[in-house]
Structures are given as C-alpha cells and as structure tokens.
Image (cartoon, rainbow, N blue to C red; front, side):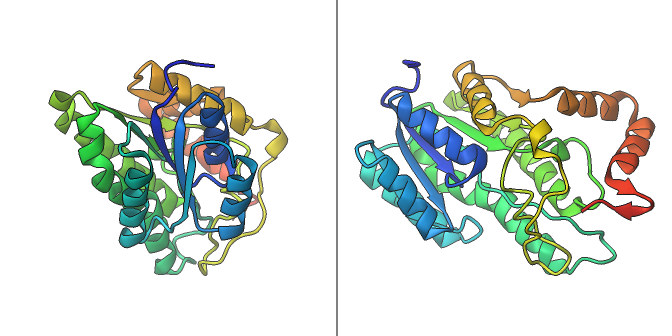
Length: 269
C-alpha cells in the first residue's frame, strides 16, 4: 500500500468503466477516500455495493452539465470535508469524417471532454488550493496529434491540454500540481461508446483490444505520476512514437496517420 494516497480525498470522474474504475478500485485499496461519478445508475450501484465498507462517495452525474458537476463536488465536500486530488477522467470519443458528421457530435464531445473538466475543476478549486492539491486531466495522444475521423475528439483534447498548461502557470504560487496524462491505446469502453456521425454510440471497437495496455496497468502509471508530481505522462511505445514523430517529422506523421486510420480509402471506424 502506498502511504502517499492513504486518507487523501481523491475525486475521479467517470469511475464506472475503464481507466476510471481501475483508478477508483486501486485508490480505495491504498486507503484513499474516493468520490466518483458516472451517468449509469446501475453501474454506480454495483460499484458502491462492491466497496460498501470503504470510504466511497458516488453520484449520478453527467459532467457535460454544469449543475451536475457543481452538485457532485458539493456532495463530495459534504461527505469528506475537502479535496486533495481531482482526476478529470470522464470522456467520450467520436468516429466520423467532418463531411459526414452532425455538428451536434462535436458539441457533445467538447461539452464532456473539455467543459466537464472545466466545471469540476472550477468548483473543486478552492479546496484544492487550500490543500495544495493536484489537478489531473486524462487526455490522449489525440491531444498532441490530430487524428482523422476523430477531429472533434482531437479538438477537445487539444483544448484540455492548452487549458491545463495555462492554469498550471496560474496556480504555481499556490503550490497546486497540474498535470495531464495520455494513456495511448488502452482497453476501455471509450471506443465502444464513441459517437458516430449521427451522435449515436458506435457500439463496437475497430481496434484489437488484446494488443492494448490493461486499464489496471494504466491506472498504476497514472497514480505513480501523481505521486512523483510529473508534468505530463505519455504511455505506450506507440504513443511516445507518435508524439515524437509529430513534433520532429510532421509530414511523415501525416502519412502514417492516414495509413493507420484509412483502409482502401475508407475510414476505419
């Protein structure tokens, strides 16, 4: 058990699936007090039941709705009195070409991935400043490299990283640690729940999940980075390679991204 997280109050948005759920389970095992939220009542109920004897606060919350975020943070403060760490994990993806996609798809993705992080951080900020805490954004390689067919997702992650870089500078004198992490391809429900061109869930993943990093391994890396107060964290060889190539060989990165996401001239959804 890592003593660093023992008795710390950690908020994890989107804690019913994937990386978020793994973070919640590991943190509770480390002795942290955890608050999490999700849109699915049944999944939250099962999570709460599985950890009935642990200090776990849950609430049904759609992070794209400001009032939901406000209530979630308020109830967390009521339950645990303060917040030490906020992990903005809740996110949604999309798979559609710009020419085919309904504009509402872009709005939904931005509302969840960017504004959801903004809302939760804004309402938790006074307590985080008081406790010289940590703010984390779970971003993506798509925040470094725009991905075809995921343009709305990429836009939201670029926005998230730019915003976090700005508030990191703002909060330096308050001793608040701000970082973002880019998991790379990880076994997660985010691809199955990705929005198609009409805004409905895709319901399947085009990727081979067996070749991806396990969510528990990813969560362990994230928590280690928080403990060590890393500036950023990019995971997987493919993720690090993509960031490197896009920085130093952008034209090559364009060609490789096109080859990866298109087969026979059609987008791999």
